[in-house]
Length: 131
Picture 1: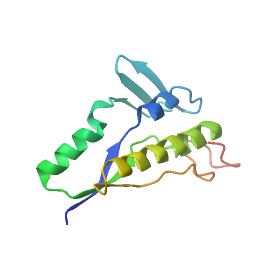
Picture 2: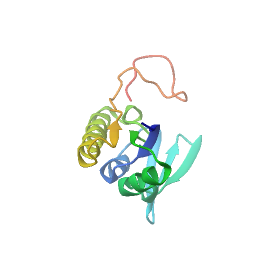
Picture 3: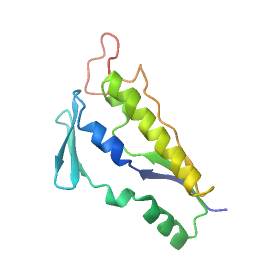
């Protein structure tokens, strides 16, 4: 059995949720892309097309891969406000479960949770983490 130990997916519902975030991780729409900025340290344009699960299965078949471990790409729910982080983790986990069920053993989802202790490296290290 050939296993791809990690490939990324990205649910549209999670991309839309990112637009509401008010922490240092900000997202705006530019055409079909979601432009994500990490507190001014890094910015990237996220297009959902490469994350299409049907394309993933096609590529797996072409490469002879039997199973793929799926994760939702960055930013993770732990980088959002507490309320959005919980909602984001739920969206990501539900999406991974849906894909695992839809593709009957071809994919295994790596679940996300919103950590209350994670602190992005550009945030202060004093005081409790709030997102």
